[in-house]
Length: 197
Ligand code: SF4
Ligand code: SF4
Image (cartoon, rainbow, N blue to C red; front, side, top):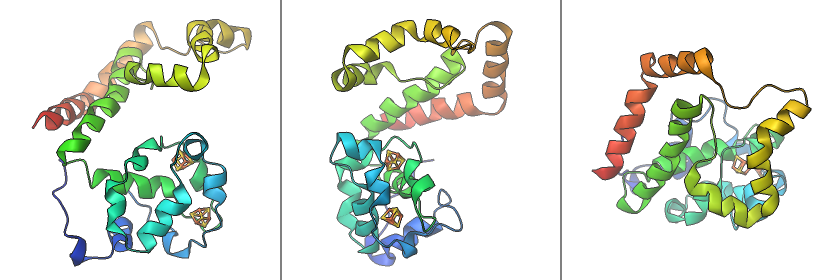
């Protein structure tokens, strides 16, 4: 279910983040010393204006304007920042909480459509895969080498002695059954319907 709008005056933003179930109990956000290690290793920061150190600072500064910062959507949850943070903070988790607080807003529902395509890829291929909608952007960023990788992925994997990336046959059926029985499929459907309402 999509969260209702929260009242910025009722709580500090950092407390809203810490009490969210997406945040680890020992999230070290209040210990952030602005060292910038997260930003220096963040792939999203390398390719856009997104800055995890700055995001954390804005939360600590109780700056609610952050919720409407479109750069928040450039993080793709690789967790590199979390692995590198010396005080056990996770800008990645912080980002997840912030994004979720905005999903009920009409202007962000389009994002739900984009991200629900990741769910479709599990149903279609049995693994997470880059949604078609992001393909043009990836080609723009990485050029022909990205196209070559996509076209030749299975051959490259075989040369490296790895199995196919995409799951096939009975294994794929098994994954689909798990996704159905666990409720993933029906929740994905609800998620997609929510973006229309
Ligand atoms: S690496 Fe951790 S402590 Fe350093 S700025 Fe990022 S969140 Fe703060
Ligand atoms: S999870 Fe997001 S903020 Fe953290 S390193 Fe990856 S892209 Fe950057």
